[in-house]
Length: 139
Image (cartoon, rainbow, N blue to C red; front, side, top):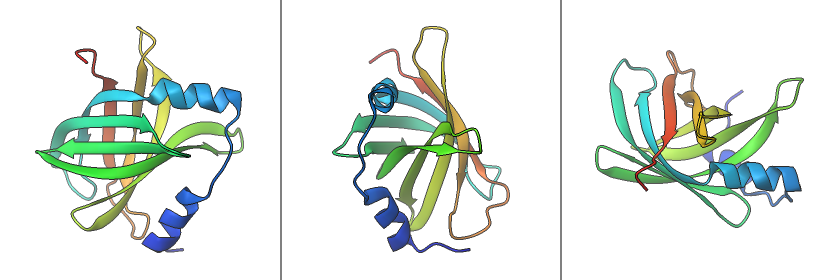
């Protein structure tokens, strides 16, 4: 089933309340990250930065690749029957609506480290894009 961009943004904009545990997880993700990735539907790779900050009811995501910065939003959502929490982001890049789903982990210094897929929620993406985010310890 295809989802319109309007529906995608509307779902992310619905207000919700955070539990104390969710607030901690959101706080854990806030920061500046170095990013490496591969574009969706491509074998081309890229590097850049991601800045995650707390918005009113969502995470604000600022992605910079090749000197171009795009804004997006993110939310922690439970997935699978085990209700594993992942970071789901949405943004528009080059006129294309994209979504990312990231596993949340910590590195050996207890900073956030995320990895996941970038894909189009409206079309089949083969292969999906891949990204890994590493906290920028120079900040």
